[in-house]
Length: 108
Image 1 (cartoon, one colour):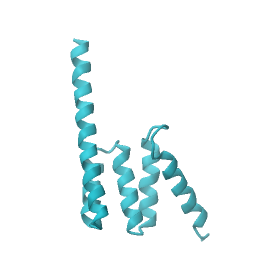
Image 2 (cartoon, rainbow, N blue to C red):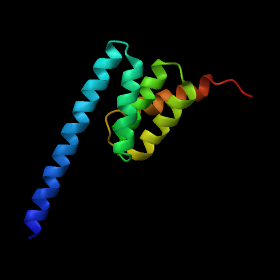
Image 3 (cartoon, one colour):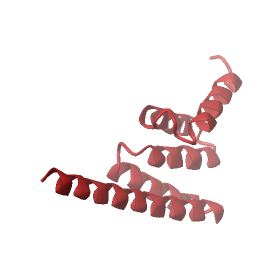
């Protein structure tokens, strides 16, 4: 019984990963073609469907950054950091982006 359950969990994990990669490719293509509205919609759908998937938050942070929506971008990058594992390949880039953003912010 346990091996069957493990096998099913592995297949579900693989399907989720495949879907995530499809969404990332779609969003990447839309951003490349400067179709930011459609990219934002796809990334928002990703985040709504997969609230614990760090890549959805990363895409939202990147798209809002391209649109110069600084506060929204920082919010999604911060959420990415709370969801992403310590070894996530994009973690260092996001930490650096957030560090640079706070360093360039003017005091209120």
